[in-house]
Length: 233
Image 1 (cartoon, rainbow, N blue to C red):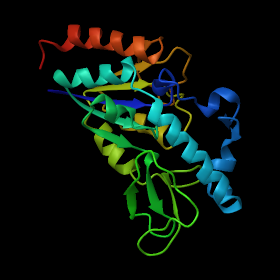
Image 2: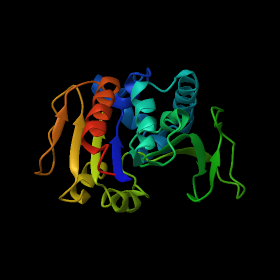
Image 3: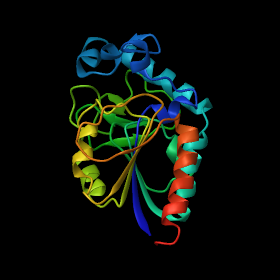
């Protein structure tokens, strides 16, 4: 099977009702993103940060995968698909995608403030002040905040380097190091970009644009790939 690697951003989940902070000038659900998604914000007001992510979990519980998520799952019938997502929601998994790597963490997980390797699945429940890991340290959302390193970026780069087809869906390609993954796409791979807006490509290479929202764009991508690769294996 041809290797298809997909990089997704918040635009793919917008059609499921999950808002993006960049659409509102740096606000995320009316919060300044640096107050709720940075080490400084955590240091200044832990209760605010915990409340914010508790609310995001409640919102996620009611969200459902959209046509873009399910379309990527369907592509597994004909391609070896790996999804690398900047999103912290679990909509790819709920759509049935088997291989998903979260660059920025996962909303349904908590981790120790002092031992990052201690990660816990919490589903859609809350994290409260006083909730601790087994070593006695406060739990925090298992989210990569602004200013923090992306632990899985090297794994992501290795996956991208195996791509025969690379698709970018719903991301502005301005957040690094995720945007830098384009540098690892093999020279002979076909690159698609699905977004209704103009997106500047940070590296010089041929790109096939599908200027649609994620749901319709993935449907068109399915048609293109079926036509061009159905007989090539």
